[in-house]
Image (cartoon, helix red, strand yellow):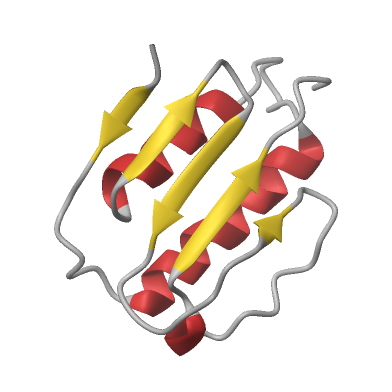
Length: 99
């Protein structure tokens, strides 16, 4: 069963972006220096902190709703993050399980 999360949308958009940037770095690296993979933990953290979302599977998909604007799309680990804070509405973070 997927784990569902919801929280108020009062978090600042800039904070949301900063966390996404950190998340993308973690994903692109795949493993932390101690040999563990941060992807699953970070995905759940994103869903808990930054809106309602579903963590589906081990490292497969997280859908989030931001607090302002209207943006839809996929953020893959190899993509640069160019979305401005006020444009954030929703993200589909598609994570490969190849890490």
